Amino acid sequence: MNDDSRETGTDSSSSKVGDAGLWQRFFRPSRQRSIAFICAVGFAVGVVFWGGFNWSMEMTNTESFCLSCHEMEENVYREYRKTIHYTNRTGVRATCPDCHVPREWGHKMVRKIQASNELLHHLLGSLDTREKFENKRLKLAKNEWKRMKRNDSRECRNCHDFDFMDLTKQENRANRRHEQALKENKTCIDCHKGIAHELPAGIEEAERELAVGFARGGVTAR
Image 1 (cartoon, helix red, strand yellow):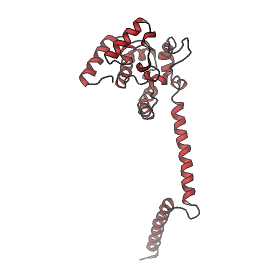
Image 2 (image 1 turned 90 degrees about the horizontal axis):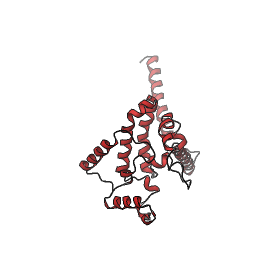
Image 3 (image 1 turned 60 degrees about the vertical axis):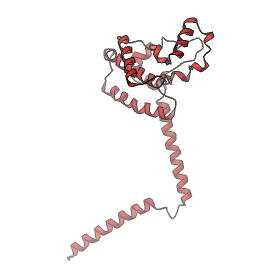
Image 4 (image 1 turned 30 degrees about the vertical axis):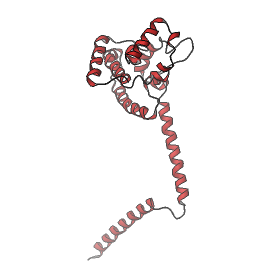
């Protein structure tokens, strides 16, 4: 074997030894640092990571974040400002995330993942004009009605709950409708579509379609 071959072999062996040493140092505790120290550093890094993650979740769970997309500000938000959920005699408001983002952590994460599709369409300009929004209003509304029907209007029930309603203090019409809803096992969205946004054209057909779909699928409100 000539000198060049020996040098090449030596370099290759040194490289392998160096790589092995790198991985050993990565997985083997340091001689200069105790395991307790390494665990403490890891715990601190974990706390910082979790704090940053939770902060980002909360920042994307505000009305101001929702309105950072002009599709929201120029369409549904203007409608919402005319409703009782925006302004009322008590000053108690229900903002975008109160109605459209679950409070429970697991459900919230699922909703956040689903919302990534909404961000994609924002970037694609799928709803960047009033005309585009109106053309898809019915489809968007049906998606939300389905979600609320499936989860028994979970976000509504964060504030409104049949178990704590005093029906005797309600107006006659509301009293009758709520008693009927209890008997027929209905959920909030069955009767309160359009409570915060304008109803789309074609709602009658959409309601029939949804009713048939849930009946065939065996999906009930509760």
